[in-house]
Length: 272
Ligand code: SAM
Image 1: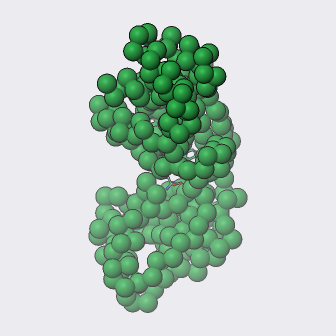
Image 2 (image 1 turned 45 degrees about the horizontal axis):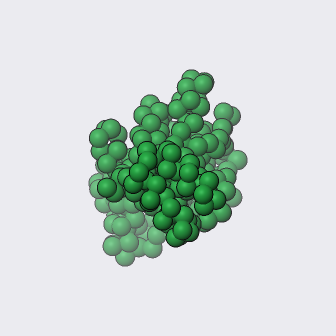
Image 3 (image 1 turned 135 degrees about the vertical axis):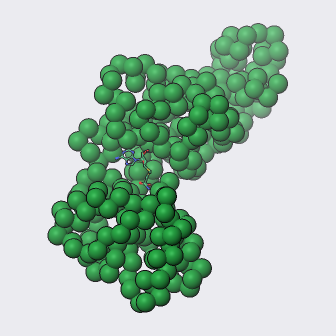
């Protein structure tokens, strides 16, 4: 399983280059696209198409080649194969047939975005692509609402605005969002903002809706980060006041961070 560049050819590792050149066959998602990569490095290994629509049949052919003692490298269009990309089924089939499967690590869009997210708390949860339809997407986001670890999403350009709007609706406007657009490419853009500011950020420049996106949303503030006293005061105020006033007063009275109180209050209201 060989990782290939997300956009910048310089990111193909030395080992990936050697293995692609030495393999008997390269199984690729889109052979025309991968041919350009191979041409750039003067690699003439035979390419065959294994994509999501023929992955089962492709796996059978790959197992056949491996049985004959041939070496097969599998690549996807960009990044690490098997991560929101074809390949996972092939891995399972090849291993089940008794052949070893070896990773040749390298670029991965999710990891590249996380590396610049500054998540001092550490943990993250890879979600990948959300369902394309609004209802299913909102339901999937609602299920992730309590997750304390940062959430990592892949999203297509024509859906990114709708997806971010749903995130604001479900997670609230206070949580931090990292937009990582066109990583390693000419128009790379990395921006950190409160979720509530994201619709205006996208609206400010139509170019910001072009290209490929990773979205990282900071995890839900956990009750561990709020003192029992702050929660007690907030609960008392929430029983009497609108959410915003309750949060503002609780922050003034207890000194707790407003964004933590806000997210906690949203969760409380959602759970009622
Ligand atoms: N397996 C690949 C990986 O993990 O790097 C991802 C493949 S997935 C089919 C494609 C998605 O990865 C895109 O829709 C986008 O969300 C993300 N992606 C790929 N290249 C990117 C880039 N250069 N900048 C930002 N996101 C990228």
